[in-house]
Amino acid sequence: MSPKPRYRRVLLKLSGEAMMGEQEFGISTAVAETIAGEIREVFQLGVQIAVVIGGGNIFRGVQGSARGMDRSTADYMGMLATVINSLALQSALEKCGMEARVMSAIEMKAVAETYIRSRAVKHLESGRVVIFAAGTGNPFFTTDTAASLRALEVGAEVLLKATKVDGVYSADPVKDPKARFYAELTYHEVLEKELKVMDSTAISLCMEHNMPIVIYNMKKKGNLKGAIQGKKIGTTVRGD
Image 1 (cartoon, one colour):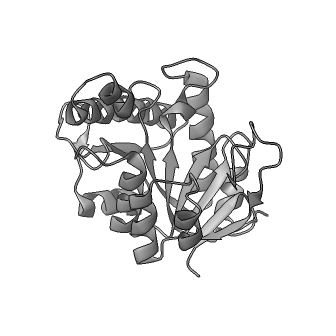
Image 2 (cartoon, rainbow, N blue to C red):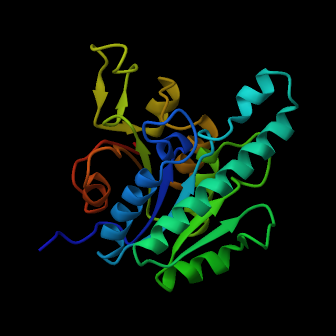
């Protein structure tokens, strides 16, 4: 019998790049289906799951700004990219027999529900996976910040950030074989060491409200389930 879950309501943060697989851009249907399968395993434990996905596989706002595009316009384009990814994940979840709802911070009734906190909580309590799209609906805020904000709003017990490495290192482990792995960190350490866990606004939000963050390797099957069961997987960021 599987260990009982440590958390009953979680928010999963996925990067847009995670949806690419081995492609240079766009969405890998196979990857979306794999992610959906992992979410389904967790759901079967009785866990309520919300998701935030980035849009970097389709459009990255900062790059657009660097090329001379107005930053606000670039960020809005990035928000729309997250809606595309959210719809792809919704389709994959429905394909494996789950109910899912995309809730957008930008009103677009033809493709997604408009985000309302109380309605999102009701969906979670009714056994649906809720995918939050379009970031916060405001430029100059990342999807990391959106993930922290939505996690707090819906009362998630932990924020899980899926990455391509085993957790947080002192440097890029691909480029620096001597990079130190951190199994546990405090919010202050993340900010002081300028570790690339999440942006400083997102970390500060979690710190202020004592929202634990678990950073894990999404490429290793079963890591999401293990993290939710409280196993020592990846890096945990919490208060002192």
